[in-house]
Image 1 (tube, one colour):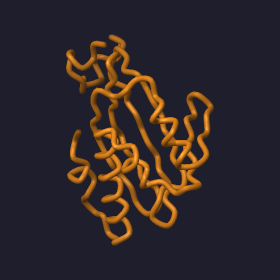
Image 2: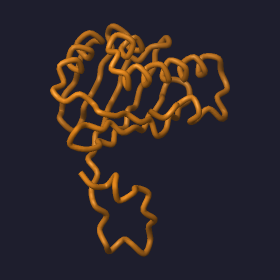
Image 3: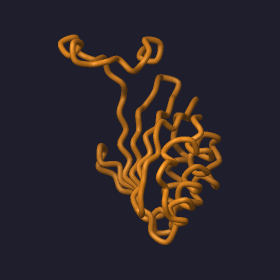
Image 4: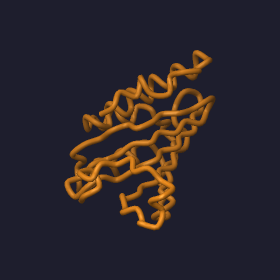
Amino acid sequence: MTNSTEIGRAGIETAEEQQVHAALDQHWIASAKGDLEAEHDIYRDDAICDYPQSGERIHGRRNLQALRSHHPAKPAGFAVLGLHGRGDLWVTEYIITYTDGPIYTVSMMIFREGKVAHETQYFGEPFEAPAWRAQWVEQTRSEKRRRR
């Protein structure tokens, strides 16, 4: 896992933002280790988590923890790519690697009183870049990571 402490630290201004950033660091470290109890400490008891792509909403920290503990595919890897935020809104970009390949993920968290009140997560599988765009783009993923 990438140490998110090194990502996005520049310009944090308030003590509250520093506390949120530290809590997010611990959250993502616990997520990578599979420590479900520590991973879910960041959520309010009445937190809501939305998965817009599947149209699902999870109500409550315990339901979210139970759902994640019953996921049939346990992650084989986890890497935070970026952590950005100000005030109550924080966004994390990361990759969850399962046995059949990586899933690129974006988590948007809204904090209230130091805990996550609402999280929205987006999940995307990698795809091959179309050849017609080649003259305008730079490839950022290695060939090895691209293959599933």
